[in-house]
Length: 139
Image 1: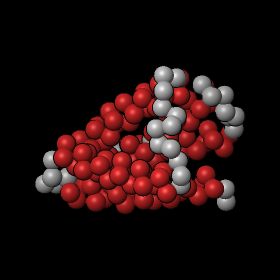
Image 2: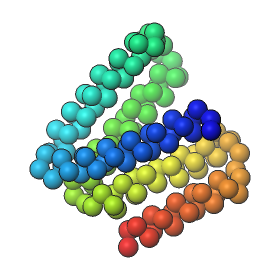
Image 3: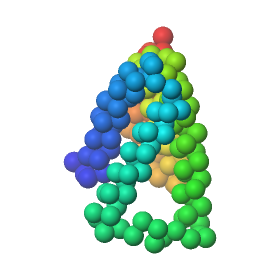
Image 4: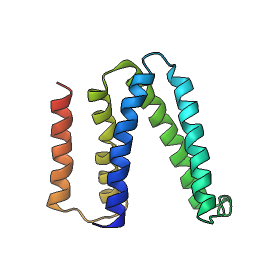
């Protein structure tokens, strides 16, 4: 199995377990506070990870297109996570998380259309099966 698939599978499993703990916490904890605290951990651990790997965290920051892409991605992820935490605080994890997880279909479509990644029958079937699972889980 390739390294990127292994990392993606780890992310999938860990994010799923994290959603369970978030839902438990959000029964009584304000989602606004949870976002700040969880993302403080993310920033802290991300910094430690980068520094232990010898990465100059701000070395690539400048007035350039890649930095603009990072800023746009940061804004979009912020909106997505705020919406996700709000939904998780109000709805069942078994419905909210699968809907949120369908972001892969958006990413796949953009990969095909914008990045010109190859469209295969298996990839299209995977997205379609994800949509079917979402339909079934929200019934």
